[in-house]
Length: 98
Image 1 (tube, helix red, strand yellow):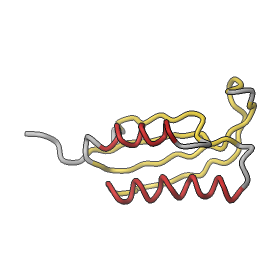
Image 2 (spheres, rainbow, N blue to C red):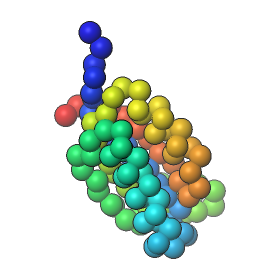
Image 3 (spheres, rainbow, N blue to C red):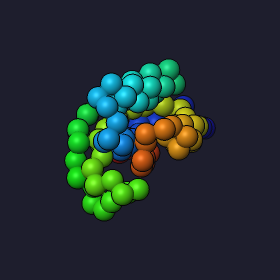
Image 4 (cartoon, rainbow, N blue to C red):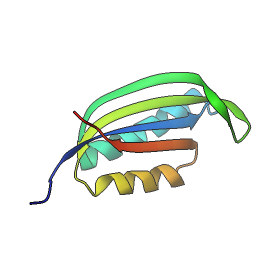
């Protein structure tokens, strides 16, 4: 029998050189996308942090951690949207234990 829902975590980094309004717009875009296809459990705006290594000559990024429940096919779509969204410099979606 196929699973209908699973728990996931998504961590993404937004270009910190964007303005506050642009960062908020990117965060809201992914929040609404997740809510439309699953259940948002927790969203942690971690803020601006120093990157472990420069990405595209940027030393800092704005980190966001999202925990959600969704169908097993949704993470692939979420990864695709992360990849084509202007301002997202890195993203990772994993299956969560809880």
